[in-house]
Length: 169
Image (tube, rainbow, N blue to C red; front, side, top):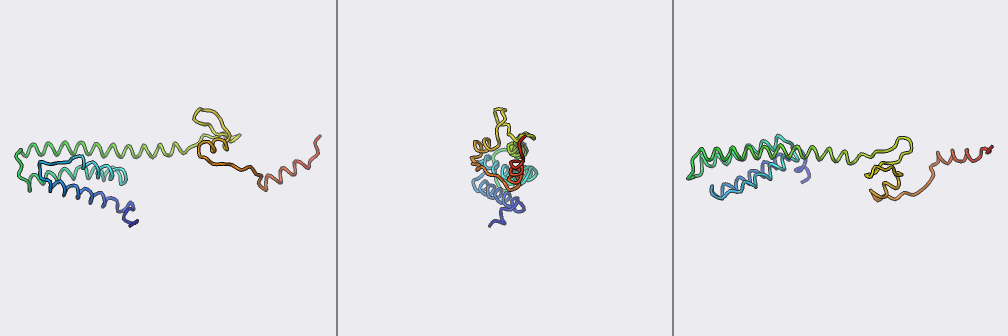
């Protein structure tokens, strides 16, 4: 089951989801319509598979519904009304797909920027949200919940012991 949700197969899932919505749309007749449902596969495909998959569904789904009007349904309105309606859906859904992709890219940038810590090169203190410099152990204790245990590594122990054995003048 895990292989189904790999990035390679996600577009197939979005297309299948879009087809299920179109089948439901077809079975409900031309008078009952839920265009908001079209947003779901467009959003998911734009967010997880990229802009072009979202745009593809944003164009394809209204065109399939337009084909229902041309070929399968007997509607009381004109073909021109159906074409205008489909054009408006394509415009709105394509804009939604582009904005969703833009939002996903901005979210990735925010995640990267939030993971950066400004740290002093010399003393290794961290600048916190109030723009004050704080010891790294205190900062991580407050923000991450990590507790630090004090100790001395073997290299520092050798250095300390040699410093202590030198006479003080």
